Image (cartoon, rainbow, N blue to C red; front, top):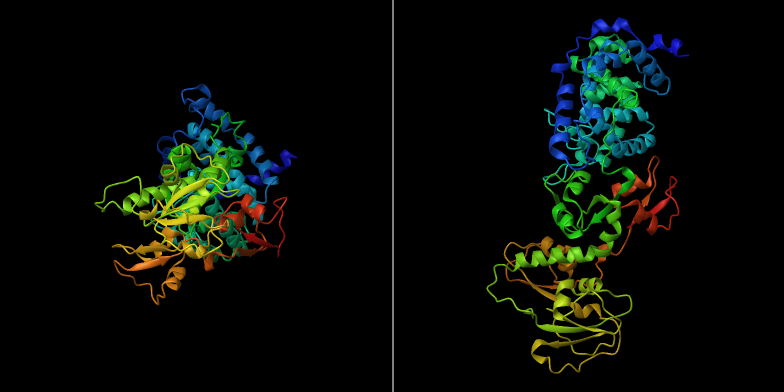
Length: 557
């Protein structure tokens, strides 16, 4: 069988059509640059320590290299690859030159093969959805050496090397803080869509790769100049010089990644595999460093898992939340301490907001009222702090608490700017009095819930503040503030007093998004689209498995 297949993958008649010069190739330059950044600069701590001085991680000697470049052996192996893939693999002297080039990077290939354990499952799941040959996952090695922060001389970024304008066509947004082209999940989705679009045009996977590299316009001209031929190997002489290198380079790296064990290349195991990572949603603007410090997660690990945040900032707002990826073992810790983390951010922001004040710090804040909250069943310090827009630390300080442990019926002192109300309501579990009336704390009510209408806060507008910033601070919407204060525009002035009711349910946040499943979608892609997690969607919809069907309606948390 192998003997029969061997001739169909060797096309010597095309050898003279390619003037190959690997050393001056942009493909080689990009690969060299990506692996150097990967190995020496970006992720020095994200691999298990394997010394490059060790025998199995050194460069090949000339004799070893020559033995590995046996033509008949390579041709037989590529013939097998050809039978098992829709992609048309061929072997010629140009492919051999690229195999030789990549094998000279043995010390880097071990790392790249290790990284494939993290990225290839992502590629394969996405490619399967779009009916793309799984072997095209090796294209990311040619493009970026699996370095998600790789940048080309032309400005292309990420694993799949998207240029800015092409990225925008496939929903890869770029801001001062976030570059979706560096997001392994979003960029892979975009690459799959792009390849599927190209295949719908050319119906030839080798031409898809050529168009991915050179652009559809150049491929169309090559087809036209060839007299209308539509096979990559037939229009090869009419392609740009750089693009003639592209498919041979892809075949070479596919061969090495498929037969790395036979080529005596030892993978350097990555610190994480795909199954060891989980996704969490960040609700307020913060930084990877702040998350690292609070949850005691390695800062290097967070940067490695979230290369899309180009300046360390996670710019989440109420209207645009971002997900980050963390080691799965920290998932429960994150959710158990999430509110406490946001409280710590609030404390820091409050310190900044009041830094201009000349008032002396006091254990008792300059609030007009003190409220005594009676702890109800199921409540925690975090939920109570959120209810009154204060922090857990404040409540512990005001009540001399040494831990977060509280019990049903316990009364907690809460300082707030809420105006004191007469105890006419029968639906309050708190006793409110002015600071000057602490001694007369006999005004208690008989029921268990604070009426949201009694929780109004008066906010005095400071210099530089906007309605948007104030709304974010109190977790409400601009529409809410305008309604509560009878405002007809977003214009506010310094010193203006605004009524805020943070405990009243926001009109705009009362509903859930409903997504109708479309053809080709998975829970993973839907979760990415809405910046949530698969587990959250399954929990919200009581799903027992990840299987979904076209037309199914899903509630998005």
